[in-house]
Image 1 (cartoon, rainbow, N blue to C red):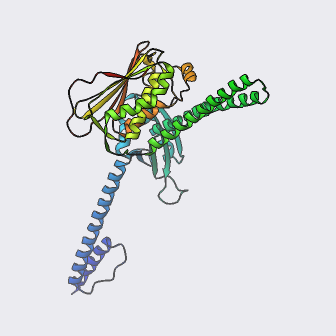
Image 2 (image 1 turned 180 degrees about the vertical axis):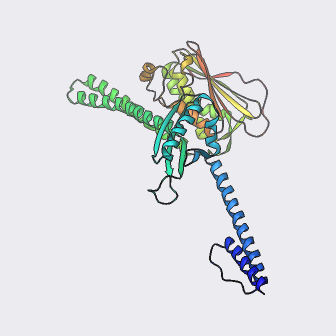
Image 3 (image 1 turned 90 degrees about the vertical axis):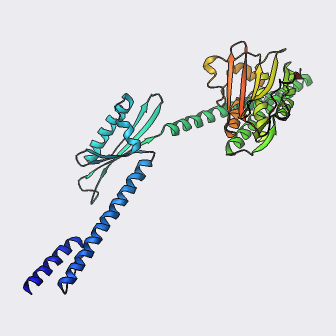
Length: 401
């Protein structure tokens, strides 16, 4: 009996090691064995659940886009997620990040939080923001038990901030110039009595007012195109898009003395997308070609397809684009010849509208150009369903002259 009681107590003591709360003594040896088995089972089930939770946490940290680094109290790194691991590869730019991480981790393990921004000139060029804080197990005023550091790639954020600043500066300039001119013209008109001078001033005021209106219209159009995530998916005949775009540009071409020549595509040639956006993009390309052409030049439009894609070319014989400007012509307000743009009243938003339209349609726009020999812009868009004629294009038709 004594041996049974002693064994029961030992089993109860062993069970107490696996139970988080105090336990009552067992009534019998069999009950002690049963309770010990249940306690051991609960203990290992809890350990397994804790391990699974830890595994899920580590997986979640691995898919976080920010780099995450954990260090112990001696500033030794004990964990880094997948995004942070790329900074420990030994390459030159990553070595700079690794050095900064080590410095911030050492300071945070000593109780001092810190931040640092690194500019990596690449390629690709990147901006990284590092922030490290001490980790405390108990009270915030206790000795740090380690350090926690986050690496955030702020390159896109900085780029968007720069675009926003440039946009505000450019649109302020674009509106300030004609509005200022309107003020001066109105002031001059108020003290003028010569009918001929009054007529000239009024005409000039009308031109400046139209310039403001065009800028606002282009901004509204660009905003609407950017806000619409996906355009309507209609089957649109290409020849109708070309015809409508040419109609919109005809008056400007006649005023400039430029001929619009259309190589009529097959009526069966179609694209998939939003007709209004596509006409807007093509009209902007035509308008741009006319503005940078000289009197007597031609602007030609043609389309072709390989069955999967449709390519529409707008070619001019104008001043061309320098090679250094080819990558920037689709930026908002960027203009190759600012003097000519002032004369023609361009807003610098037309090609930005073109770029957003083709992006909305999962297509592309490219430009080939040589200074003094003209430029060719090519829209590449998804082809519509059905057979496509492969016969040679129809003879060119002069749309305006």
